[in-house]
Length: 239
Image (cartoon, rainbow, N blue to C red; front, side):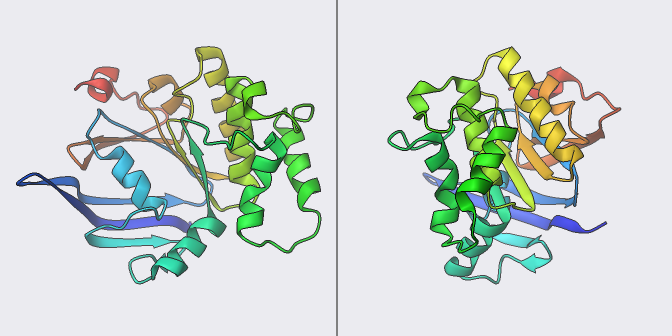
């Protein structure tokens, strides 16, 4: 299988006062095309640091990272930004929609920033929003949308460039349980259609919809399980 993500012995260190903290310590993982991976772990386990490196928002101090068989470590900042904008879609807990823009204008932003010259940009974004249940909300501003609708708009924005990889950081963290279930069902549907997804989550019920669950602790991968193997919730959420 083609590896969308392949890391080998990733390490990331931060200095806190006089102490060096190893936020990531020898992390190796692969994510294949069409995979759906959930990353879990207590606060401070390294989940967010790993997500930032995989999303090309940060760099590892040691180890290697290949995204779509391209070595990230050897890229300058301009090349890294181009790679990130073209090949990765991001979904965040806080939606990150610009309040003065309509939902459609927010979805179109990645195309504008990338100077995408393909015709039919608005139609492509409109079709995507219609598919995600926002056909009658395209011209509403974020404060006129429910939490679930805002997250659907954020997902549409993440997908409008048709990226090979979708990274979601606590995408249901600000949603009620019913809306969370709807958003994760949408991720399952996207994955069934071939979208590669990696999601960071604290919610056991959300993670169990994925193909694989990776448990992190103290900057390391402590355990990995398939969908058929239940990882104990106590281990996931212990502090």
